[in-house]
Image (cartoon, rainbow, N blue to C red; front, side, top):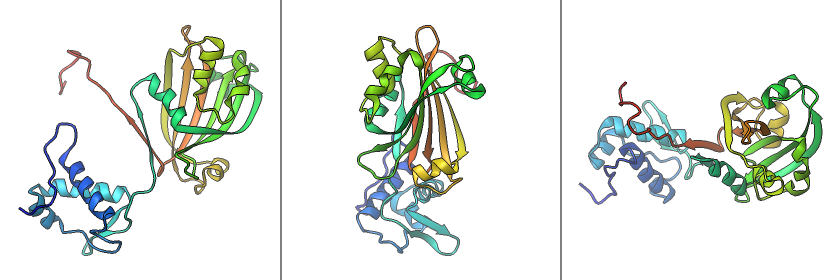
Length: 257
């Protein structure tokens, strides 16, 4: 066994993830320059005393991150020293959704008052023709020039006064509604789907039209169960990861049921 860093057994992280993290660190550190080949699967098995399946999963992860390419007969070739910038949103509570607005700053493009059509009235649970404040913008994090999402937000007309506070607001609009109207959000329902980016949104996100994206629709409800805010977000696939934790309720079921 050489002096290389070794994957450790852990309940919180699989060994293939640990191995891929080691290789990512070594690639970034220049041990494997662009165009060079990583050790073979057999060599990695021997070096780290792990199974071939673990090695293949670790290399698959590197490929998904865009760090390497794998071709039969050519081995694993380094293509990049670092993965492209990707924003990871981790959701475990309503507070995490609110926190997202602090991390991903909203740059407002347009604000206008609209009347709900058939589709919008179904999403909002309102009548056709009801008036809502519509806000369109993009979100960026950490001063990055490329947006992580295009966002369209609908605010119930009763709370349209938040318009004066939202331009480049560092706070979530739901938090502004609670602050200025004393109307707390008690439930958020969301729907996530994989979509192709429409042409007009692709231009704002600086991605090719039709490129893969993650669409998230969230309904923000008050104590009475009424939708008071609706957000529609579209995230470029290569810039965004959605992460959530799912915990087993004690004694609710047995694994394998």
